[in-house]
Image (cartoon, rainbow, N blue to C red; front, top):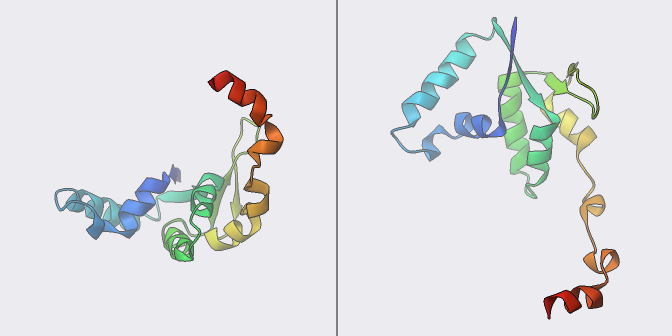
Length: 126
């Protein structure tokens, strides 16, 4: 069986075909049909990168996106740990993976005044 990894943009195309120019819609529809008709030949995967992309969405729309992603990839979660040259996979659905791996908002906040001496930085700007 062949493994296939889709970039986040492909999921966006497949989920909202009507959002794209009518000239591109037939191509996206053909891709969508091909994906669904060939499920027995391919394993479609999502990864931590997809989850990080969706973590930037502060609305609940991300859960619709995760549900759609699951309709394509089932429970095929591709992972590669930092420093490893081998990828592994887990059988977990995208929503569960997102809930387990989503970053805490507190961890992402950066106080630049604590990191840099603002007065010293101002000297360089003069």
